[in-house]
Length: 432
Image (tube, rainbow, N blue to C red; front, top):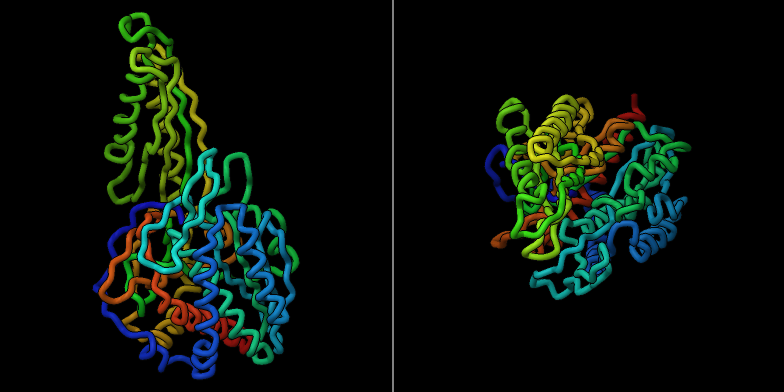
């Protein structure tokens, strides 16, 4: 998940212990989860200690593929570079349902008390950086491996087929590379076996273990990336009158771009325009020729998305014309809005309430974070929910920070909920 602000949750939290919630679940599923959870937790620790950056998830993919093959599944590897797809065919006729977990880590140096914390390092954008699962993708991968273990033991009772998608590069491909959900789709992950729907989960650093939540409708924002180059004329810093100063123009642009959110868009339309990087100049007494700025736009509506880009071009044109310079804008639509299909959400909520207890199924406000699960949910109806991961009496850093923590106790809960959703969906569809 791309780092962004999460809006406040709707409603207060009430903590329920995992074992209590399990009493309302299918006892066969609960027993299988209890049997597999210790091993799956060990796998989570191993993945956490050996994180891999986007499009580099070779070791992780090998562990996943070996696990699925050991369960007797059809397995496809090398999808979108390192993606893995497993197919579990049930013993009864029915539809196909996909579930998805992302595998990549982040260039973040971990600072947690875990004895199995990451000390891994790798090259990122030409620099040596710490690498860690600072967004919980190790939990996502482990939970889905656990779901595969449970469902493989029940395959004769399953009415349909389950497509297990282990996705690389959710956090974004390295510059010059393609990857993620879009590349998996482009390479035909749904071509031979198209699911009726797709499900996914994400850890939540603001929700306690024992709760799950989801957002009806638009849940996570579209993410666009832009690079602005403002060009002027270089001169000695002592002779600014001989320059066309791109630093001054860039400064004006940064401030004026904020008026898009505050003065051009409805206050009832959530959006974000952020400049995250400014680079220009080599020396304190030289006015440079060019300044480069990188940033992100987050929106929930294509009309607002188009308006932001239009106003950016108008503002940059006006600022640089006034200053005597020019500009270039490279604007890239990266990730679409993740929308929870209303009918699918309404159909699945009763399952979550049966497993967790209604008081532990929360309605969560939309977040300006982005998730390329949205590419899958644009192809087929999608349902993306949040898994509480904060241990009682502790706090976690936000996603994408060194102190992000996800408690192991969330793993069996995630396994129970996702397994229940899959079985209820397929069995009810098979009964239609």
